[in-house]
Length: 238
Image (cartoon, rainbow, N blue to C red; front, top):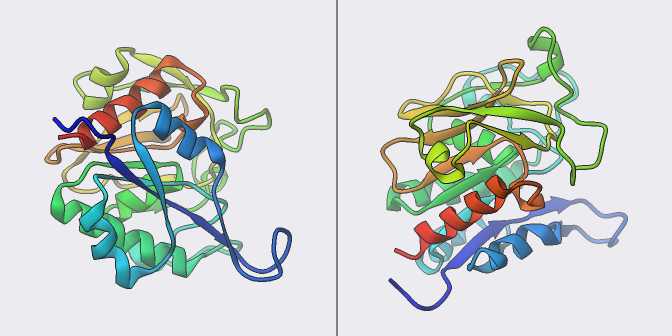
């Protein structure tokens, strides 16, 4: 086992001119990098350069695919787009290149919120495009309270890697999404589910570490969140 901290690549969000800068700019909440560092990793932020994906993957030890206020293009999973979707094609193109390359190398991957959705699509699954339209009696998955507080609970599936990591059958989570997994990708199983039946976590059973969660563990609102980050960074050390 290496004594040096593993290098953890974290994907960035991108914005058009306005607000922070009159030029296009990247963005990332500090808590993504802070929690990776606290878990023992050395965080590095990844700009959207698909042609450099292989070079990034040659250098990093693990990949975090972050969330954001945008949607995965339904064309990627063979569906027609509903009205009102927000697409960031450059970001998605880069993240797909990174995820596909990481999967080929069996590099540890942690997908967070939209990162879980992208992971499911990259592995061959599909998405619900708007939960309120498709899930009767759905919870407020765009929770009205602060993301630093729980929005609801999720049940952790027994026998899964996530269950072994968190050591709980039910954990509180924050919730900031309007899309979710519909059809789970081949080779993956559901490891967490909300009371309304929405899939909250998936994992690939044939990979060293390949987990997606729909909530935001970087806010560290429960012991389960920090346990997940530590387990991910630990897998990146081998």
